[in-house]
Image (cartoon, rainbow, N blue to C red):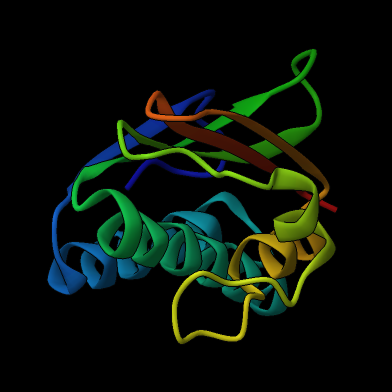
Length: 140
């Protein structure tokens, strides 16, 4: 891991099964702690990695998660999570972001819950075009 004073670090994960999700979650948590995030915020980051990774496995079968650190203008640090797949896309994005909507047996809180845990959250999706979710947590 890079020291907190380093400018940028990037982790890249191919997501194809729950073991890949677990590996990404664990390494993302360690990176967040290394950057200087408090344990509570580092845990939120790990939860988001896990939720987005599980969605990749459940709905798209495979994809990627990239976790990177950086600074906005050289002072404020952040962690950015980019979850990307080429699956069927999210059919009703508004309902998914509102929470409680699922097309599986889950609670429908993965994407909406992830959005609530992060400071910035953007979704690009299209039917049969896949989904890219970008989530950012700022170091406080």
